[in-house]
Image 1 (cartoon, one colour):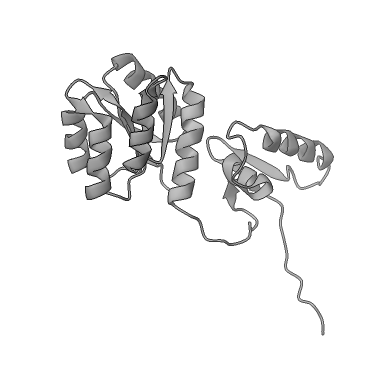
Image 2 (cartoon, rainbow, N blue to C red):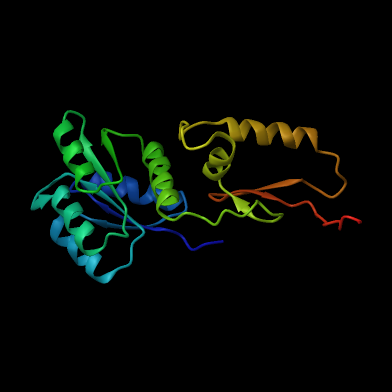
Length: 199
């Protein structure tokens, strides 16, 4: 399995920082938090991050300014902006500055997690190899394979399908056909053999 993605959360609200830190950690991410632009710049200078979640309104600057700086200095780090619901101008400017996504406040941590995973997936394309036995596939990867990019990130059809497959293939004699990996996804556990075609 790949190492945990490292997420930087920048928000001046201590309650939001604490909530997101705990929630994202429980979802399989490493999380660092910053309360303002100064602390954010310190973290960026000393750490390696896979994605930044930036509040637009900070006590000593703007998440938009941080986003602009990241695009100039570290363009490989994707950015998700947190904005007040009525700040349409900030959303538009943020996207023009290179933000990868935005989410209005107040927000559901589960939706933010889905957006983080979607942005990380887009920014680190996986090799187009077929799913082999034993390979771990996340819910999002399975949704992309079955429904494409234009789908609801909170779609539960994969869970329903896996439940049906488990019921259908309960008596294989070799244990469960699929293994659920917490905060990871699903894994095919059945033994698969390749049979050479005869000429």
